[in-house]
Length: 166
Image (cartoon, rainbow, N blue to C red):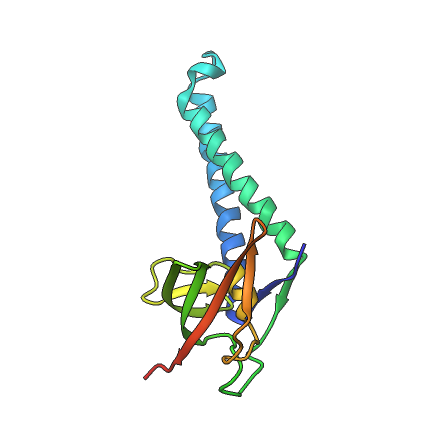
C-alpha cells in the first residue's frame, strides 16, 4: 500500500474521526444490548432493532478497521515549496482533465492534505491521495505531460493557472 499523505490538519482530522467512530461503536454496543434484552425470548430473526444495530455496528467496525490499517501508512507532509512554479498543498488551480480527445472537462480545485475531503466545500477539494492529487503534487505548473491512469486508460491533466485567494 502507498503512503497516505496528510498535512498536520489532516493528521489531526484522522485521529478525531477515529475517536468519533470508536465513541459511536461504544454507543451502538450499548443500544444493541438494550434491544437484545428488550426482545429476550423472541427469535433473533424477529428482533429488527437488534438486527439494525448489529448491521450498523459491523459498518462502523469496518470503517474503524480500515482506518487502523491506514494508520500504518499515514505520512505527514508539509508545504514544501515557496516557488510559484511548483504545485503544493493548499494551491487552488484551474485544470483541464482530458479523458479523450473530445471529452475534456475544466475544474477549479484545491489540493488538500486532509484525510477526508469536504464534499461541500465551495472549491472542489482534491486529496493528495487521489489520482489527480498524486499526479499534480510537487509538479511544475508548466508541466504539460501530467497524467494518471484509470483501468489502463491514460487521463491527461493540463494546468491552466494557479488562482490566488484574496
